Length: 221
Image 1 (cartoon, rainbow, N blue to C red):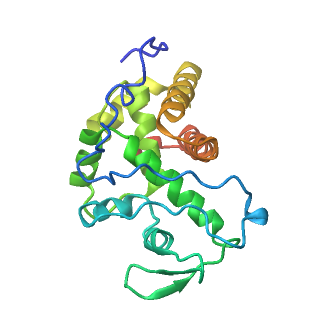
Image 2 (image 1 turned 120 degrees about the vertical axis):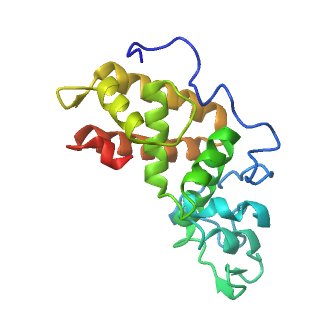
Image 3 (image 1 turned 180 degrees about the vertical axis):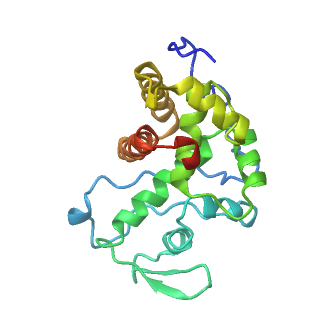
């Protein structure tokens, strides 16, 4: 695969999900987190919660590591600050201390919904037991580096990634730059809120550093 920066859009951005979303993804538009910081979060009403997750989409939630938070934020009542957890039990929400969890949940839901439906379907088929979100982010890095749309992974893909993206154990500067540029373009188009985009850029940069510094980067995929 070429290592020069391509002129076309990111491979996974060119096939973004339609307004209906991927086959198992929520169909409601992900929420905009409120502009207040956690220390200034409102105390009279909760931020706009993530949209309710329909039954057929619940299998996506383990990919995001937010299953504990989504049902609560989707059912929180402003007057009581109580929601309902995944087991149907009443759960209190603190608008300050739980704000970080809300922002993470909203941003990750928005990112997953923006991925191509075929790519999400393949990941679900390959990882029935769930996939850590950090690993999903690394799969997107792999997709950009190899200019591919699929997010699944096998030994052949791992070897191709190392040959394409690394020289003498170091990630090539042009590959790193391409990843950052194309992921940035994707996030700008896919996520509706700058706070979401900033949070996801931080996650991508963190996982890119992990891949750069790993002795065996293929083990992280």
